[in-house]
Image 1 (cartoon, rainbow, N blue to C red):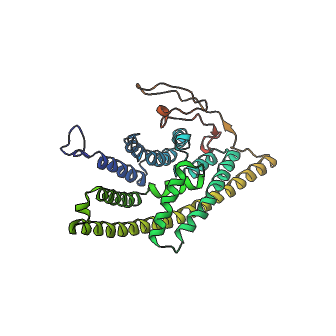
Image 2 (image 1 turned 90 degrees about the horizontal axis):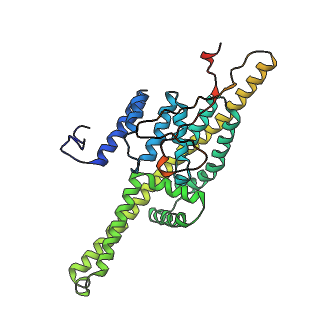
Image 3 (image 1 turned 120 degrees about the horizontal axis):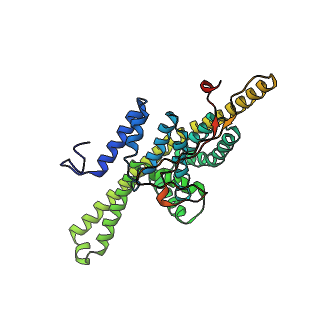
Amino acid sequence: MRVLNPREGARLDPKLREMAFLSLARIHYGHKQFEKSVYYYDHIDRDSENWLTALFEASWAYFQRGDFEKALGNLLTLHSPFFEREYFPESQIVKAIIYFEACRYPETRAIVDDFLRRYTRVVTEIDKIANSKEAPEKLYERIAMLQKAAGGADDDVTARLVSLALADPQVRTARDVVVQIEDQLKLWQEMPDAFRQGTVGRETYDALKSELAERIREAGEVTRKKFERELYNLKGMLVQALQIKVEVVRAERDAIQKRLAGEKTYDQLVPAAARMVVGDEQQYWPYEGEYWRDELGTYELDFSMCRPLAAAP
């Protein structure tokens, strides 16, 4: 990190430095060092293409250290209208778990139901792509068509599929290479006739066309593998969502049985204390349902939750 530090290092590579921060954050998270994990996630600049990923992963770290308010604040940013077409299905699972841990069972059920409604259809569409027998070239063309459709349509599934595909670095790189070769072919078309009809011109054209076909095939294969992985992951999330619903029913049943038996329960909600401490360069501003771009990533919720069992009298 010191080598890449813009103030001290001899090598300037902001992207590599950013990936190093992400790696350090994940390493500390894996070792249950959640404070340090959050510290490194906070180093990802909000203008970075990895900022939303850092926000999402940091929400897990905040949850693990018991800071539900900040975890939900990050998720509020992810679920804002600015990013409604981004693909972070697991963020709904994190949100449901937090509400469940806080004994807010009706809201937990609503979050899970919304997740199932949104992503059951997405799983169906991903399955069609992952298990299709079409050639890689055809798959590449299909994603290109979906990308065009997502640009002007309100189809939620189309937007999520495109976001899923393009969010993967390998897929994005493979598609960028295809675009670069297509640009070179356009330049070839603009060359004088003498060049295009000459030996070198024809050989250049044939080489570009051959390379383009190969790169399209590779991009299609990479995309298929991405959808195969995501199909497995998303099916696991659907199972997890159903398990949360089962746990909600069990928790509500246990609470009712204890009340009927005259036993004390600990699922009553304790009002949240307002969190108004901000940094020197920030100003506290209450959230009233509106979203402002400069506030994204700074939200914290005043979150009412049940008294932990250990704190019960």
